[in-house]
Image 1 (cartoon, one colour):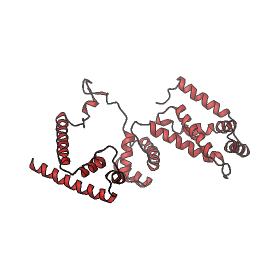
Image 2 (cartoon, helix red, strand yellow):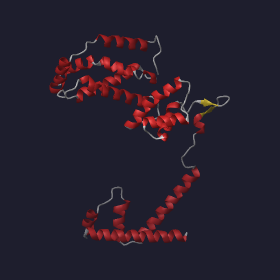
Image 3 (tube, rainbow, N blue to C red):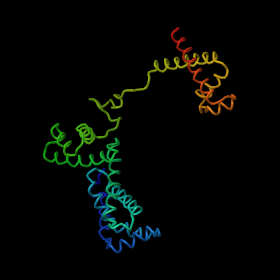
Image 4 (cartoon, one colour):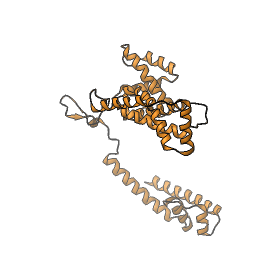
Length: 287
């Protein structure tokens, strides 16, 4: 949830902003010294100075996502994790400023956090879905400000062309953005004496179906046991150890045990399976 003005959390956010504004920025030369000290020697004091100097950038990025209703301090924390990941992967020999490299890691970490926590339903997992989530939400906000409210078919088609995605994808993400999470225990009805979970269908098998399935399984087991007894001993061994054991034996294992070649084991297995199938088909037809 967002911070309530005047709350202790709101005061912590203001203190964090004041602290970040007091931190000194780094020149290109200072940044190069710190990134090399961390990359070459794993100098933790250099890493701390590097991270502290870029905390202002983390806070700036986090502020862009406050409208998603998540705690600002949590957004900053996730952005700092992205900053640490950038420091771990940055190559000082690249002809680029660390801040230019780090901002992508910071933004990605914050966006991933928003997607994980904005709704209990996963909104997007692929890079394209994440990009669509943030772009579509921004464009929907503009539509809402103009008084249009939720997307109508013409607006959805326009956004599909603008974002270069199918209309189905736009409608799916828009539906998720428009919906709100609610508890299955939330009451409904005139007197509030019902819960939404009462309307959820139980997809488990009914007691009658479970009993029938159990009886069918027992019948098939008896038929299989009877059919197995009609096979020669070697074929019974092969079927049991190849198909009925938890860890099926290999052709090589059985060739050693039975004293025949692997090809012979394969031939016996094929013949046994054919016999079993014929016996079981005859028995089922006779029922």
